[in-house]
Length: 95
Image (cartoon, rainbow, N blue to C red):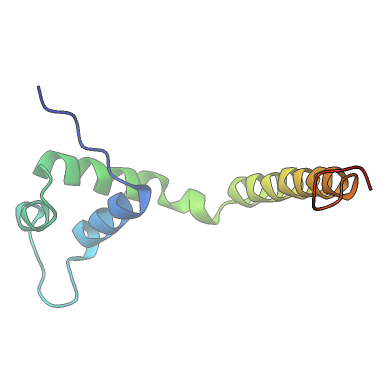
């Protein structure tokens, strides 16, 4: 039994973008894009539709608020790491 292939978000985005606009060189069909990227044409159509439907969210306020929240969480974690490293010397004994 073969294992399903998994694609990164960046790969999916690029394939969907190609499907929307064709490549710079030559306008390509969905089938040509699928063949070039070794995926099924139906998958390309789904990614294209998803990009068309949800692409605007990249520029939405919700996305920027989520990024800000993530940045706050990261800052808190870095602060905690800094405090915990300040309690011990580089050799692991108390400072």
